[in-house]
Length: 576
Image 1 (spheres, rainbow, N blue to C red):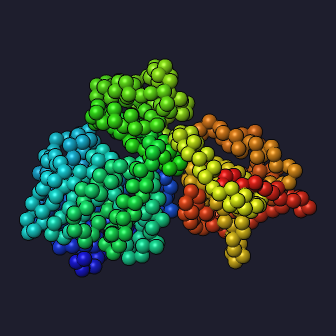
Image 2 (cartoon, rainbow, N blue to C red):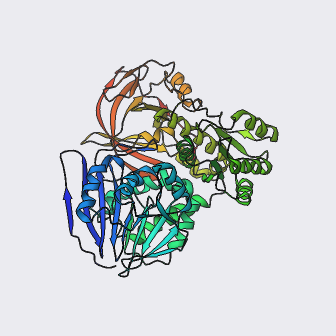
Image 3 (cartoon, rainbow, N blue to C red):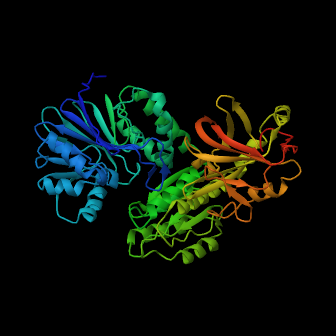
C-alpha cells in the first residue's frame, strides 16, 4: 500500500455542518461534507452517528471533480472548492450516480463551469437532463471506458448498476490506485478521522449500511466485485463515511461473503418497479428491507430497463413476485408486465403496490389476473394516498417481512425437526419469563412478545434481550433507542399474549384496544403489566438469527409487589 500524505485542513463553524479537505493521493483531494446531527437518511433508516457526503478532486493536466455534495452544504462546499481551484475550470464532472445527496450541487457546478463535460452512465445522463433543466456537455461511459487526465491519471469506469441506483458507476485512477465507489463500501458515520484506522468503531455501521442498501441487490454486488477483483487498491474512496485504506481486503471479503450468503438462498423474490417514478424507489426498498429480514434473497428490477429474457429467467427462479405499478405510458414496462404474467405460475406468491406517480397502471385488474393464474396474495395491495412517511415505510417493511416469512415457513418447520431429540428436550428445560417489549421512535411504534430476557449487569443496571432478525421492532432497537420492558403476571397474561401474538395487517397499531400510558421515554406502558422498566439500547451483538440487545435500565415500577412473573416452560428448545 502506498503511504499517502495526511495533509489536511478542517474548518468547523458554529453549526453542525462542517467541511474537511484531505490529500489522499497524488494531486487528489477528498472534499468531505460532515453532517454531524443527521438522524434519518431519507425514509429508509435511522442514523446514530450522522453522515458525510464525500466528493473528490483530481488534477492531472486536466481536472476532474467526482461527485458533489448535498444541497444543504451549497455555500460551504462551493467556498471550499473555490479555495482549491478556480470553479470555472474543471474539465470533467463525474457523476457516480444521480441520488441527490451526491448530485445535489451539479446544477451549481454547471453554472460556474458551463464548459465542463459531465461523465456518467447513460441512465445517469438521462436523469440529469430531467434534474437540471438546461443543456450541458456530456460523455456517456460504459464498463471499461477510459478518460486520460494526463500526468499518469487515467480514469477507468466500472459499471455497477443497482448499487443502489440503476445508474451507478465506479471510477478507478490507475496512478493512485484509488477506487471511487460512491455508496458501495460506504456507511453513515461522521467523524474527523478520514480513514478506517479504528475498524471496531465502524463495523456495525458498515454492516447496517450493507443490510439496508446493498443486501437487497446481493447478486448485483457480486457482479460488481467480480469487475474490480483484478484492480490493485490502495484506497476505496466512498461517498459516505470514512475512506477505506487500512483494512481493504477485510471490507471487500465481508461484502463478498454477505452477498454470497444472500444470493445462494433457494428462496428468491423478484421485485419489479420503475426507478425514479413517483415513490416507487422508497416503497420498493422498504419492502425489500422487510423481505431480507427473513433471509430471503431479493432482486430489484427496473421495469423500464430489464431485458425480456432476464424477466422470464427471474420469474422462473422466484418463489415470490412484488410489482410496483408502472406509468401507463411506459411501453417497456408494459412489455415486461406481459412477460411476467406469461411466466408466473400458481405456486408463487405475489404482492402489488402503487407507485404514486400520477399515472399508475390500475392495480386491481393486474391483481385479478394473478388470482386467475392461481398465485397466493402475499399482502393486500399497498395503495398510496400520500407521500411515504415513517409509518407508511414501516407498513411496507412489515408487508415484506410477512411475504418472506410465508415463503420460509416450510424451511423453518424443517429446521425445527432437524435437532437431535435429546438435545432439543434439554434446551427446552431452560425456562424464562414472559414479557412485552413496547417501543416508540418518532411516529413509529411497535411491540413484541419476548421470553429470552435476562439481567445482564449491575453497574449500570442492564438487561439483555434476544430479538429475532425478522421482527419488525428490530428496526427501532438500535443504540440510543428507547423502549419499555413490560413484565407479565402469572395467571393474568393470556389476554396480552393473545393480542400481541396475533398477526395484524401491515402498518396496524399494535396497541389498539389496550389500556396504555406513556413512559417518560415515550414508549407505551401496558396498564395490565405486573411491572415495567424503561430502557435505552446501549449495544447489539449479532447471534445468527437473533440480535442480543443490551440496554441500560433508567427507571421502573412494580404494580403488584406480591404477584409472580409469568414463566414460559417449553418442551423443546428449537422454537419458541
